[in-house]
Length: 479
Image 1: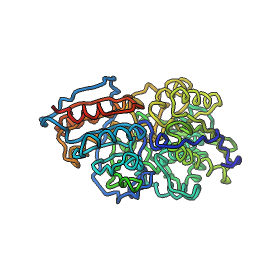
Image 2: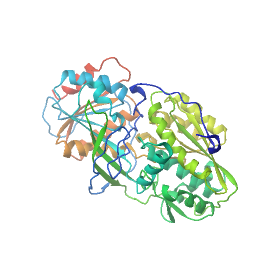
Image 3: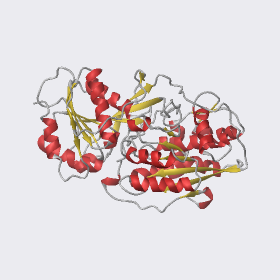
Image 4: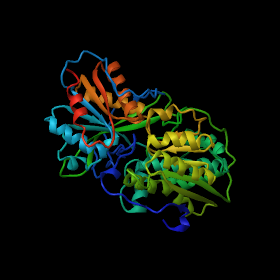
């Protein structure tokens, strides 16, 4: 980025290997929108498909942290489960899947969420992984194509995972600040739903500058995003979302392919919650936004395109003739909770009222609790999906443009039962909030809604040299 674009940032420290690829904590997924998309990892995407719109629930319980919970679902038989649900990240997934294929001929259907969507994984495992089906939040917004073109024009390549959600987060933050007319977290918070939810002038990437001008003039605007319609519900979560069903292309061809996209709506798809009635606006000022995403650590390679996407709305304003300027300050979470809190406090101390971030739920929750909420700073994560984010006591300062795993758990249960034909399942989940909560949500819906039986929910720790024992436990959990 050139200095005149007013994007201040730390120096890139690019990490190599799978640890940096598509490993967002509870959040990595493809951007395959209604037209299939490429998943951000080289897949060609599918046709998107058209399926009936489904209803997504509100809220969700965070749950406790048992190591293993036995399911009590339906009338499934014993032995090996029909479906093995694996929740985790690529750096552990390599060894876990190697251990699985060393013990199984691959007759089980395996279902994975976005955290394991890394097109390089089959080659690293040494298996085509043809029995694996994935789900992931998709970029199903009305203006996905306009965003993709902007990203291509700016960087000379297609957008990656959760880039559309990153763009939408900053675009909404700029619009809310322009409407508020001041760099105040509380004032920006009160404008979030006013500029994101209906009605008013419809604004998207294709007419973003006109939208900023209208917001600064005190006019009503309705931002329609690349990732979704970006209407916020009472929890600050998206009121609608799209999910992709995808598969790996195989060991010899890196990438994933989207086979279907399903759209889901909440009970109030237009959103709901507190909002200002009007905005004072104003020109001749600098809008301050923060970007708190991983530049280093395990998520460095995933974080880079997300940051690039988040910078585009600021670049558009700074290169325009508008009598406004955007100062976008980038801080690195290092994919670490402690470092993330320290970086968030740097933004707080700089007077930033709105932050796009953070990425992973393991970082986002402590950042929200220790930095954003007590200092009345708006946080809008583009990729933190854990149920615990919805349940934060946040005084309405925490939003996100990525859907909650409450919805993904239901999507996975439906895919397991209807698409994969499973009546029994076992889950292997990474031992953190993301893994446990998604496992519990899947298991509850699979049993209660689809009359399935979950033999066991089995936790595993990250960075282990072998996962043979937990894989064996899952494969024999019906005995």
